[in-house]
Length: 401
Image (cartoon, rainbow, N blue to C red; front, top):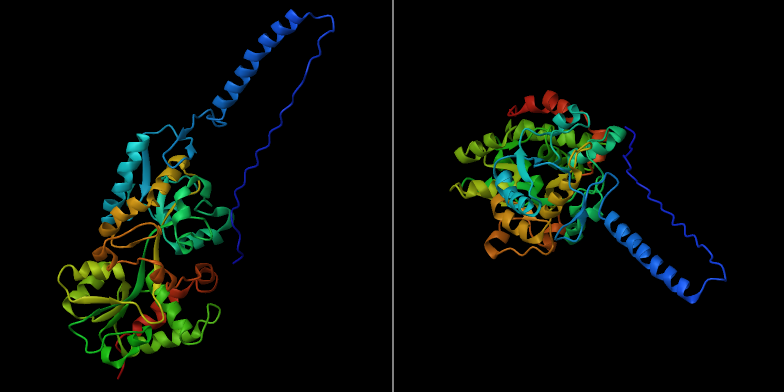
């Protein structure tokens, strides 16, 4: 697939023409003084008008300078619609919504019916003005070229982005990552003799018949597949070593393929599954219910699980969206959201208490060890990965003799 990105550029040029009118030498000093007095108010008037026009955009919308120092030209609406994931995401982002409404007077409505496919079908007439998105969808948007779903953001309108880790900015759309976590290994500490330390441990015969993985339709399942490819000498262009590894895993260790978080939660709770690739936030949430489940970062590294805030192409409220995104990146607001959402802050200036910090991705040392997939390479080389997986790998679960 040919790569192309929607490049948005606006060029503003202005020219100032000054003209001077000469006066006859026969004017008296009094006339000169009178003329000067007459010209001064005119100059002051021009200056005043220029100052006023600087606060009004080309559509006649008056600008409003917000606490972050940026002047926005907010749309004349009473509601900003935010595409969300629901649940604790809405609870956490309500903290941002409250500040946003306080600053702008515009209320926020979360829409969890939003998803990437819906945005595609809406054909640049999105039902939400701003939305949560993950890195794989941003990459898919990028390879769509002129049909891209997400805008390339103007970072000058999001000043708090300068406080984020460099890896917390999407390279295709400039969308900021506002929370992130790790995709590693969850295991039942009370049901295994040997705690896992490596991705390769999923193939350990000790766990035979007690392992599950996600299908390759989602981010996590694909990340695990990429790991299987890379640690067996393959590449995005040569995935066969990964397919061979998954075939072996399915025949000998896989109990099943698990498609939903709810199902995996139940499997780990009842002990039918004792080890699985999973997210740190989900693992910690399950542990808080009393299940003896622990999360480990494999020695090869854990994969980045991210949530960005992005603006869909065609948003009717882009200026309001920019300010909402800026608040999502704020150090103090991220601090308040972190214990609710269960994932780490991306603002380097966010300071967490010791207990919260121990449960989430936090600090430079952990951030630098994250593994990021090349999702454009995935889209170009592995687009049919889940079809192949469901047809050739999933049916092999538990077929070892």
